[in-house]
Amino acid sequence: MSATHARRPRTAVGFDVAAENAKPGTTGWAIAPSAIGPQNAIQGYADQISVPSGGTFRLFVSTTAPRFSATAYRMGYYGGIGAREVWQSLPVDGVLQTAQTFIKATNTVECDWQPSLTVTTTGWPEGDYLIKLIALNGRGQRYVPITVRSTKTAGRIVLVAGVTTWQAYNGWGGYSLYGGPQGHGERSRAVSFDRPYLDYGPKSGAGLYLPFDQGLVMFAEQHALPVAYETDLELETRPELFAGASLSQAPAAIVSDAHDEYYSAQMRDTLTVARDSGVNLAFLGANSVYRHMRWAPTQLGDDRLVICYKEATTDPVYRIDQTQTTQNWRDAPDPRPENALTGSYYQCNPGRAAYVVYDPGNWIFAGTGVTKGSSFPGLVWPEYDRVVDLPTTPHPIEVLSHSPLTCAGHASYQESAYYTTSSGAGVFDAGTMQWVCALEAQYCNQLPVTPAGEAFVRQVTLNLLRTFAQGPAGVTHPAVDNTVADNVPTGPGLGLD
Image 1 (cartoon, rainbow, N blue to C red):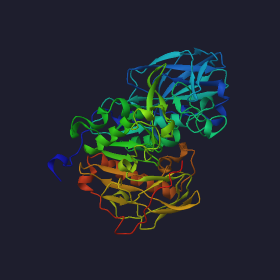
Image 2 (spheres, helix red, strand yellow):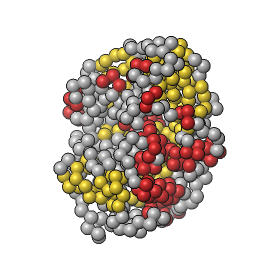
Image 3 (tube, rainbow, N blue to C red):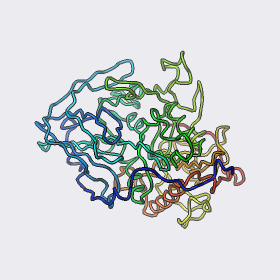
Image 4 (tube, rainbow, N blue to C red):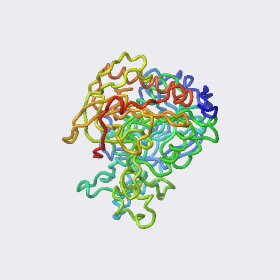
């Protein structure tokens, strides 16, 4: 390994995770299912996806209550409580707001609400936040998510909130990228951040933060890892935060959440450049970087519209620039399969199986006590990845798990994988959407994982992130191909979603 790629301890610049988590947390952040109330009781959205500390954003709130309040909670560990209160509004006059536009060409719903209050984040530490809206007549509560983004990332583990995927699944107003009132054929081709989140589970308004991000944030802060906080938007608009002018100025690692599916060309390029400059990557989910999307502006600002037609020939840019059409990344007219970056290849949904260890001697499994064939029920679900025999598969690559299952009537396997590059970067793909849930199951509405499975995932994740925090993992832990020598079956993915 050349001196250019020499592994050296990183000096993280900026946020003191341990000091922040020594402050008292509060259980007041949580919304009980019984407190959510009817959808129109209270709901809202922000005009920013992320802001730096000290920045401002506007809240757009609709409520049937005469007055409401808003409280900002920074999400973290805080002794296992999960959040700390950093700000609370005075009571605000409530208004029921219903104005919206509908763009028939793309089945896009956007709210035309008036702003209810402007919030200044002076003194707010960087991190992920949930703004809790409370109708003061007792009829309902909802969240509005926002990130106070990090402005320094050198030497740190960057946690990326997959907000494009949150928005893709957001069915507020009756339309998402997956369906409309009449089903899949009436789906949106573009979805806007100018509306509240109508998420899965209790429909609390938090997007997909609680099942796909909260467990990772709590775990990282519990162990005082040197973390930074960004969203998919920064991958698009601030690529310099992810690579830096030199390796010493770059982050140590970038971590994608449990479901980070929708990527623009610039977002993908940002991760590729980071990897090729020695930054480690971890995909702690499955089906990552699967859909090609584009950003566009809305009336509230740039980069607030997620465009994805899912079929290249129906995309208006098909006759203009076929590198930018919005189908699956692996599909024509310009196929660039996701495994060129993630290592593994998305397979199918829904698949449910025990996670079966294949390579127990790998450094990632240190301290877990596993042997070949050790299994953890329920850890593979509902979407999963696999290493496949394609020209885009990076080498050297190590298969870490090999979990047999049946999905959509097809026999298949789930596989976690780790590969390394000539830059020294290490790349890990968990290959299952259950991974982050296993880190902190109490805030996840997915299927349960056994206590043994949770302990296994926590130890593996700690091994991974502590090693990644020290710099290019491939220097001390170079991958060694094990797919051919051990005859692990490979093949094309089913690609169902």
